[in-house]
Length: 478
Image (tube, rainbow, N blue to C red; front, side, top):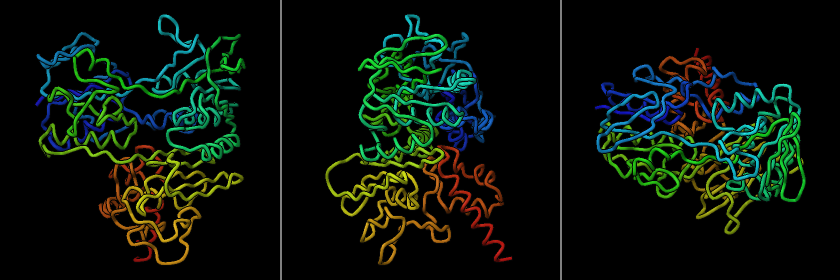
């Protein structure tokens, strides 16, 4: 079977590995518009910060060498009747199954002076989406002292924290009244604003940017209230729009993204779509864990390993980790009605909120030093009943009474085998222990054997903790 994958990002690279694991005999071709091998896009902010090298974010998938991979080669046209794609280098490929993993592109708001008539950006302005964008930002940041970041969502804050760690004074311009307004409530945003300020990131809320104007060696953002804020560079991080141009030209069903069913099939059953470009049940996720779950389903269906496999979306968990900030938001976290339990200590940069429905978590926000954040995430994922007094989850300890049956524990020895350690890759404690028993003795071995921490990276501390526990247990036996 000839399978062509359009896109060599995190979704496309994972799909290649999943396909090969199910059928090593596939005739598999991957076309990547970017000239770089697949890389971990989530770690780009660390590259901006200078704490991670470009080489360290390259994704090494076990089956990557077994596919014909063509980098810097975009697909410019698709003939579904002839089952053929045409590439930017003049090539033509036939397929039996085609997978669109085209991802998304940075949103550039309609702001006066932001985009030229020819589509170019001003000299000191850069979007934040790709490795090339990252290189442009770091080049502009070299020798700079101040930076503006347009957008106070997760992407904007990732960019801001990276620039601040380079020593720049950063100002985030957010058009609405609180940060990360899709994941946080106003109270959580207030704590986050203060925490960011302590890291050198100033936040301007309700700051609607209406124009961008070049200055001598600088760039200015003109706000709706007349203020003009200047910086040595301006990073645009206003979200991601699904890349659907190819699907539209091919006549596939497209709404916000390329419309897919539970088997990740588009309106043409020979064409699949996964990741940021795909729209399932009216939703475009833009998150890594769902994209990789979609890759597994698509691989099952394409190879007929599990022809009836279905993608079942789960409520997302959003993580933001920076020096001095640990944030997790999940589920219906912005809900204002119903049963809620909250705790706030703004002086310590701590905020916690549980949204409760039928004695289970339907949403939560955890900011700052919350020792039970891993427990909260697992209880949310698994639908575990809450303890008799939910305040225990906010204050970092169980208050009275026995630990609820099935509740995850902080100590690896007490964690159930089914506890999910890596949300992005659905790696459990049992998987890590099994990898250890198979000979893994370092964090790198565990990562290579299970893929734990290769997504957002927020579980690396837990992986290291389990490794330390396993080493200790082995020494005790010896």
